[in-house]
Amino acid sequence: MYLYPKWIRAWHVVNAVIFLILIVTGLSMQYTDKENASYVVGFAKAVRIHNFAAIVLVLNYIFFVTGNLLTKNGSYYGIGRKNFISDLVKQFKYYSIGMFKGEKHPFPVTEERKFNPLQKITYVLALYVAIPLLIISGLGLLLPEITITTFFGISGLILTDILHITMGFFLSIFMIIHVYTCTLGHKPTSLFRGIITGYHVSEEE
Amino acid sequence: MRLFIFRIIILLAIINFISINTYGSPLVKTEKDKVQDTISFVSPFEAANNRCFKCHGQEKYEYTNETLGRQVKDIMCSERILHKNEFYSSNHRSFSCTDCHSEEYAKFPHSGELRMEQKYNCIDCHGGDEKFAKYHFEEIESEYKQSTHFKMEDDGFSCWKCHNPHTYKISVRNANNLKETIAYDNAICLNCHSDYSRFQLLSDKAEINIIKEHDWLPNQASHFANVRCIECHTKINNNIAVSHQIRPKAEAVRLCNECHSKNSILMASLYKFESKEQRRDGFFNGIILNASYVIGANRNEYLNLISLIIFIGVLIVIGVHIAFRIRNKSKTFKEK
Image (cartoon, rainbow over all chains, first blue to last red; front, side, top):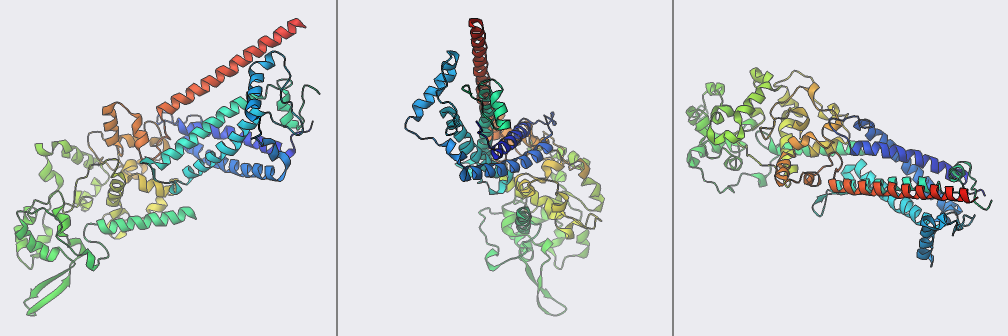
């Protein structure tokens, strides 16, 4: 089943590479020390790479949102159906118990339904909540002069920074879980193959 | 373009600040700015001092020219103007002018020789005095002697180039007045380092351009507004509140990590007051949250701990899941 068009695959690979760069350089800045100036990459270099990668991420994100608006890909992320919570529980139960009992996937992948309810909610949170917050707070740090000075007595920059690293952290955690859940396909490697070739292989095929 | 505009704004702000803080008078004065007696302090030497302020307290002065036989109005040299309010709110307000200046100044016109008057330095009065021991004036003196400024002492550099004895007012840094302290302290440096007419008195350099010299510094405007020049240009001394050992240009801090790290040098300089407060309370992390700038990002211990717990939790869940998958697979395999 051809599920991932070229533009999605291109966006995905760029996003993945940029994210890894942002995580490494972000950690380098966060955990830098005077005595340990070259933690992973040196601070000054980390700032430059982080800034550049962030701009690429923003452009890539605009590309993704535009693509979702212009193609039917956007509809895969639709949540808010009546049974959404119970569907979510069903999917969670499948991952935690059902799959070990050899049960069938409750929401098999079809051309109309690319993502299961659990995927939908995490993708929407990651792509439409965390990334915009990450980008906005990142811009606030890139151009500190536009950031509000104080917010209820606490430095606006500190709050912006906390928001930025919190979002960065959650997206990093998302990435780990995302990579792991991608081993839950027909074979541990089949979903990885799918995002490279564009073809999804399900158990039924 | 945005950076350029911000540089211009910050430069204008600095120039504006200097104009009201320079040794002497503001560049532009209006009727409103005229000296008003708003200071409650009454000097025991008020009457005697007023004789000096009569001419030196404003932009113009009057005297009787005996050769012409009439009153003459003239403009007072800006370097010789001292506003009464500023003096009477300064640390040296209880002095009489002639405590430091020659009694000969009582005569007018002043004798030309008085221009050669030997001026006191800080240490002349403050050195070896128990009352001022906590300020460590001797250490400040010895720091100054190792400073790059000291090399110019024979050319006329002295404490007064930076600290105006007539207006100097000690201020204690705290979280609320930090920005003012930064602007005040930076204005002291910029007084010469951004004003070529003053700079050339001590240097033969053909030009000064602070903005260009600091071109390498990211977010220059932000740095200039949030840290003092001395943060990078002095060697820290923990015994004194403000380091006085200005180092040569080549030794200035250029590594981002020096400030943007957990053990930021700013903790021993600009934020020293907070470090002390927090250390006393045994809660070091508060400094970073209170600090007005992101130094070393926010290395909040609680967030670090929470993130570590979440991270380990995720790895455990994945690990357990993998273990079950392996067990399940071998079971299915055996069944087959």
